[in-house]
Length: 510
Ligand code: XMP
Image 1 (tube, rainbow, N blue to C red):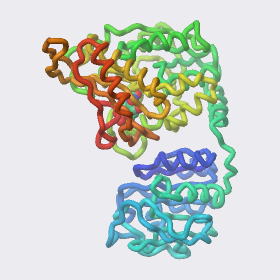
Image 2 (image 1 turned 60 degrees about the vertical axis):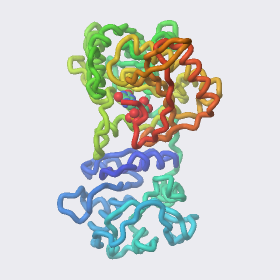
Image 3 (image 1 turned 90 degrees about the vertical axis):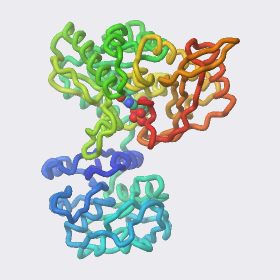
Image 4 (image 1 turned 30 degrees about the horizontal axis):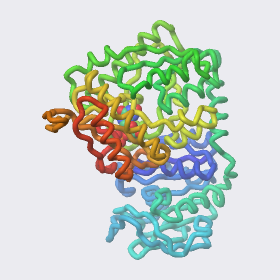
């Protein structure tokens, strides 16, 4: 295992992900993690992340210098590199020239870290401070026009520091540098794979749960399905899954979920479906503000779930299909800021009688969750299902939600998805859906004036759902979707395509 210590940078999970791509298992912990616990884990390597602070300021995040004496290789990145130098006697201060973007870096290719890397290589830089002077016993192994110490090392002690971000794809040979670190410096064998993750997770869950009873909220989405199947493989009959149909699902989705996971399906999940549509619509009446809607849906979901749980009685564990981007954006991912409250992370049932939470996918990105799903034998069509947010169509209908609007957006979205699949684009687009704007406008249909809603089509390409770009869908496909929606869905007289990236937009509309 390699451990990443999080100092609050933007790209921390990317570091873990790149290490896992080298087939080395990797986990992230806050910089507040006690050194004794780190020693007990006996990792093969430690990576210190970037972060927004200045290493020389008194209240900035820091770490015990003992970390550098453990005989475990350490790689400092950006803030992590400055912190390492600051703590070991180098000098870090405000840089006379701030570097931002793709910068040419001259590297010493005799360094273990830069083996097989080009002598001049493009790296992603983003820093205000810099290392003015390396710590004693460190050798400079890279520089740029404005940064005399772009990388330093003490090979004997296995300590390496880079000012740039090897984890970001803009650093053209970054993956090579990280794999050099884990293989050449840390001596990792690179035999970790998704199947070993699945196997070891099942084993760990089995040990943790023992004879305990487990309850899982199944939404039918990829994440909760993978979590549920993993649990069912681990503890079989001890698991009960509750599926709450909140009336904000895609067209026919409730029945589809039941067909796969219910008694007629392939899994042994003790599946319970609750039809709670009306309750949700009632609670959402007159509510327009997105975060309020999320809260209401999240809370109502919990109430319904609790009522079911009460019927089941006390359980020992509650399963959640939380994945990494949920954790980060809800501000629970250690040191980064809250963007929006994801309902599957924020709220927990207060009255469900359970002792502990199991989140088997908490460290994974979506594409990694999909790989795990395939390893678990979940059919491809389910594994490659569109991501769907916990609050469902509730956050794809801008403004107040009601049954009529839900029907409109369900029908429009079903047409859109069908045509995307017909065009063979369903696997290549990261996420796509139709939303309902709160805008009504004047149109003409037949010989009559209409005053109807506008549907907005969204399609984005993304690797990690943290950033995204609008997908380029052929005009004929969009045109066909527009035609069908106008003709087949009552209450719609305009169709628009959203071109916005994330940032500044988000993927969903609310
Ligand atoms: P955004 O809109 O935040 O979407 O750019 C990023 C990814 O997260 C999903 N998403 C949510 N998932 N509860 C969820 O479970 C939520 O409240 C929520 N909001 C967004 C979204 O579908 C996309 O995949």
